[in-house]
Length: 96
Picture 1: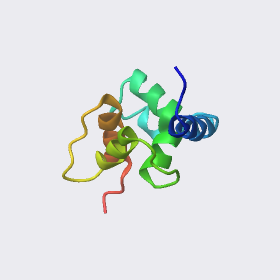
Picture 2 (picture 1 turned 90 degrees about the vertical axis):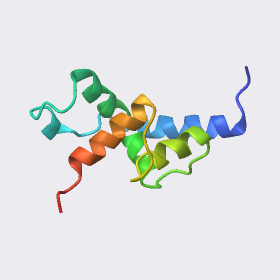
Picture 3 (picture 1 turned 180 degrees about the horizontal axis):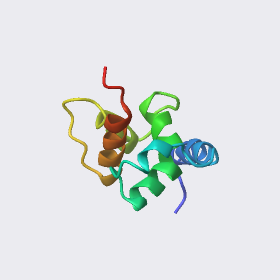
C-alpha cells in the first residue's frame, strides 16, 4: 500500500525525533509512578510526544490532533499513549 504525502511527512518528523535518543526521565524511576514498560515507552517516544504537545511539529493527522487535545484540561485521554503522556505531564508539572 502506497503512503500518502501526509503519511510520509509524519514518518519523517517522527523519525527525526526518535533519533534523538532516550528521553530523559531519571527522577521517575525511584518514585514508582510508572511501570518499567511505561518508562521504556516514554524513553522511546518522549521527544516525539513532546514535539507534538508543544507545537514543535505540525499536526498532520487526526490522530496527532487528538493526542494533543487529550493533554488539555476538560478533554479525556482515551488511547494508551494519550493516557500515559497525560500522566507523565501531570507528574512532571511544577506544583505552582
